[in-house]
Image 1 (cartoon, rainbow, N blue to C red):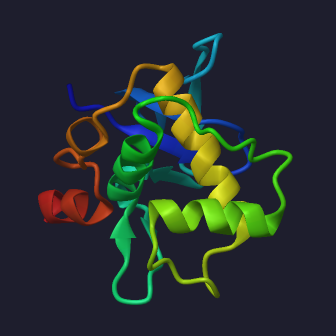
Image 2 (image 1 turned 120 degrees about the vertical axis):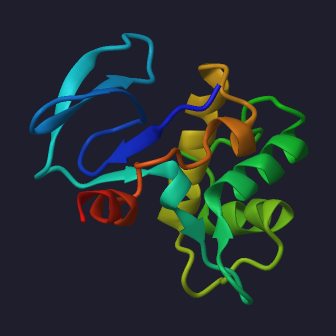
Length: 149
């Protein structure tokens, strides 16, 4: 089942798009509480399907990176404790997931965020990243602008 998973700047965790309101989106947190709340146009909202990781060649979609991580961890939660691990340990671990990642532009905080998101998705049973998290029609701003014309 395709779903739109969102990250909202300034708010922890991930959110699932439930509905679209007149001036907002209704999102549900992917945590133990599954709270529904509005997300407004002033919030910086990003679909995980629109995120990519920097590599030495060309950017790799986040879904591919998450799929690589799932393969490495055999579908279980990340084996490294990203909260306690040092920057070097995180980079060494991430090199197993995405060997060609750009060591200058991918920061330790990016790796921590990726591992946190991966654990949240696994906890919520979202494991088929390439199928479930594909961009859906109309979710891209460019698609909505074409429809408006």
